[in-house]
Length: 277
Image (cartoon, rainbow, N blue to C red; front, side):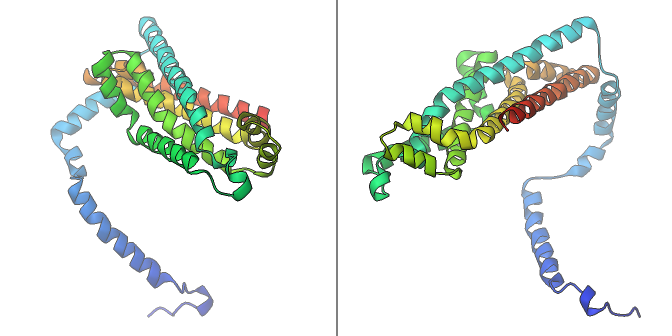
């Protein structure tokens, strides 16, 4: 028999960790059952043959000049969809941020409580923002494809609605997490809400706000590619067509370009953060 471990090497909470792991596995099992998770279907002979044919082409990207020109054109449209959608989202998110941000409330300066009308307006705007960000952009895209038809318009509107709710929520949280001294001092001395925002709140949180905005732009690029699979234009729509034709080489080329797009967005974020540091 092996000797027992010295007291200083024994883990006093191993029973709790083991119990937690067992409970986690017990809870995971019904989730896997109800989600119909059956990975062994991937080992079916027909599935393996189809996957092998696709991956064999995937290992040889297509670099034909005509195809590359089409990919670059669709990539530019993907970036344009993401940028236009994010710009429209900012048009709604910035005013909503000013409304829901309690730090910019003039009515709470004296008594510490906001007027009932101000509270009601803030709650209404918050619920609108909850509604906008609760519906995924893919669902909005499906709706707008039915309304506006196939093309990038559906993608722009879908990103604008979903990201308006996301940006306003996070902007308000970032502004409220900063120092309140400058903002409250400006408001107490008769400054307007916009002046308090620009000269009180923004200097302390500008780098974080810009970083999150660029991150959302990067997410919008990925989102616009995904929405292309439902007909919202851009690189995703071409990728969907190539995937349906099992053209692995074409899909591989598009994925390479897409990775480069995300890397460029990350470089833009790094550059802006350094300029604001």
